[in-house]
Image (tube, rainbow, N blue to C red; front, side):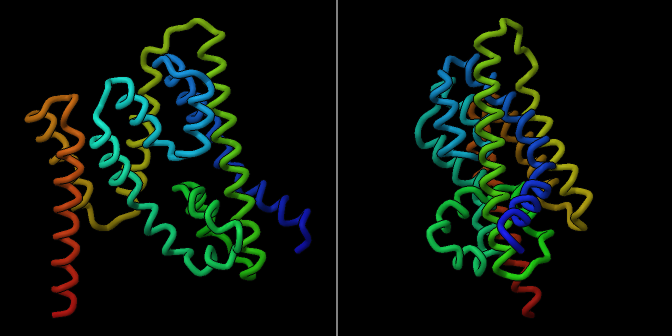
Length: 230
């Protein structure tokens, strides 16, 4: 495939991500602006952090004055799944040369899903993966900046717009529930989250809930492996 054909295919493959990132990114930009952060902070966050769900959470954590430890641990556990995404395409990413660090940084839930659908020769596949990642990053930054500008120029109530994050998590949860035959992790997360909310309160429950769920899942996974070997 020639370069124009690769760019065209990459653009087509990234269109579903465009629809998602523009709307969610705009909501994020508005929330950041309403929380008192300037457009430059929105640009830096969307460029350097580039994790949609975590960016919503970070807005709340930073605005509430959460400790650096809470932010660091929350970030680690929320983004730990990206490690496994990278392992899936380890061979492809390792052969992208100077693009390697960007490919690792820009591998999101959405780009991972698109990459899994690519049935191309190895070299062309890596090219499409790169451009899908690049297009998607631009979509997210554009949506975020658009939201920051809209939130600053148009005076309107943003009450309820933060439900966009809740809707995103609910959608991901339902999608994974339908695709998975094993619902223990989902039920565990719901149960532990509710219990920690009741014990620690709305402002403090997230960190202990993440720690408990992660520990329980690691133990369950190790036990399952031992049973399979036996």
